[in-house]
Length: 189
Image (cartoon, rainbow, N blue to C red; front, side, top):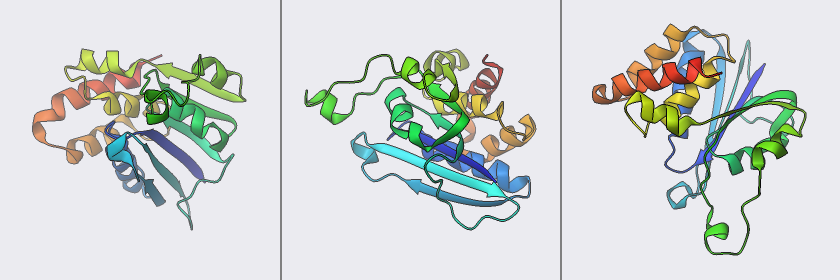
């Protein structure tokens, strides 16, 4: 069984990233269950996609402590979902800060040095500047494709399967930048 959790903030493209991941998994012939949670996404709230696949899957919900990989589109979301990562799991984090409403209003403080807090956990942590790589691809909005590229390095699916799923996922006019962003993310060390 494989368990992935994709977490971000509304507007970052996490839902599209989850759908591309699902297309890649289904194309490989696995049984797949997916759950999307995006309640207050339009107001900057959390957006989470959970994907579970294997020979036979009965539930889309990744239990606390069972995610093999967490792909976090924002640093605070990485910290928020850290309890879902299994011991020794892989945490892939976009080095972006988006202040939630309690921080904006002054009711709470944004935690300092989130990458260090993540690295103190029993996890392999990779922090990526997805925005900088997306800008290099020709589209600053392609951060989600950069992060999918980063994720692809940690899964057994061939690059061609990912790129085919990206080709089928969006308008043709965004394809060159999306593919360039994916390739930059997949090459990220």
